[in-house]
Length: 207
Image (tube, rainbow, N blue to C red):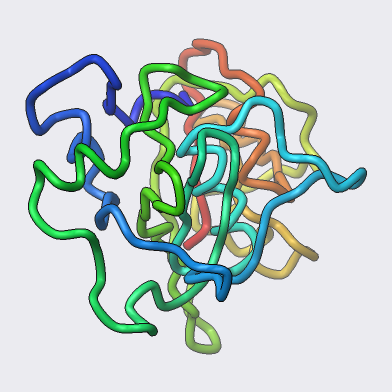
């Protein structure tokens, strides 16, 4: 699942490698004063060895940031305003293709920025007003292979979404349309761990 919304390829010559995802914003110039200030590192301070664009996007969304950016094949940064220091990117498509041209360490068919260049995406995170519930269907007839943080029974997807909303740190859920089993997950990143086809299950993300 976590590869499907990105179609960049270091080998392609047409626009699809850069604009394959609707979430793609552009190739941005980075500096020592980071354009996106929050860096994704593991507990030991190292970079995730499987970095690619969707992993970075899901992590940044989970942290509550509106933008994600990959850089130098392995780096992931998060923030809310890539336009804060002036010109938004490096210009037209051909210059972007020249500047953002490093393959991701976790998926060589994707582009993860370049030297002081960020491949920037919108995470889709939007702060919600009190009382609102917003959700997005991510996958149909699919079950996550990761263990759920909590399993409940619900009468509908809306009731399952309410359980998720009031639960601590719930980011998404899987519901069975037949058994009404409602499985809550506290991380977006578990969607990168694996999925399997199971009829009657739907995977939702909370917005």
